[in-house]
Image (cartoon, rainbow, N blue to C red; front, top):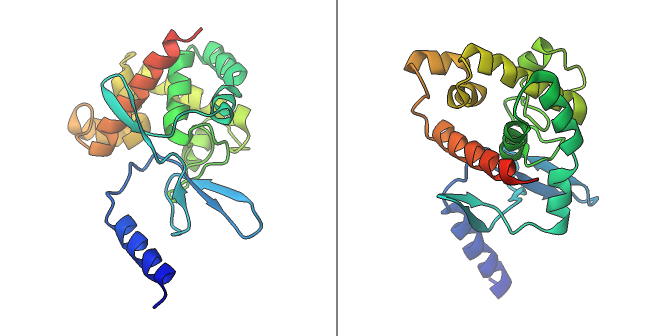
Length: 204
């Protein structure tokens, strides 16, 4: 067996032993034609985590590389749409942006195997509920997500934590548990979204 074959086997075995990352992280795959594909739930072993380096924010640790100029540009490209949707539906713009950061990291064509699509990862039923017919269109997706957040905030009397828990785990789970479901994914989701919201609230 050649040395490089042995090296690949060792590296591959090491990667298989790594703990599974959170489901909301973004993965990237470059196909044979050079096209990039993004998802937050990779089914193909060719996908690689889009942000492999651990960084910290406040009391929480997040997996992500240091922001490049391209990262910063992507994460501000939709700010006017976010502000418009926030004003239209009376939802904190920082909260909308935080949900987008956690759900798709501002990749407008992100999709999950469960069928969630776009910047705010709208499920087909949620998109239909809010008349979002072009789910991958950033403006429609953001508007539908903001509208859904407004509905949940109204349902839980302005309680942001419960609204976010329902956004992530569903209203049924919140009802069954009488509050935030004790799911690791949902608890981490709340921590990250609220930390991102605080970060964006401090930005001009």
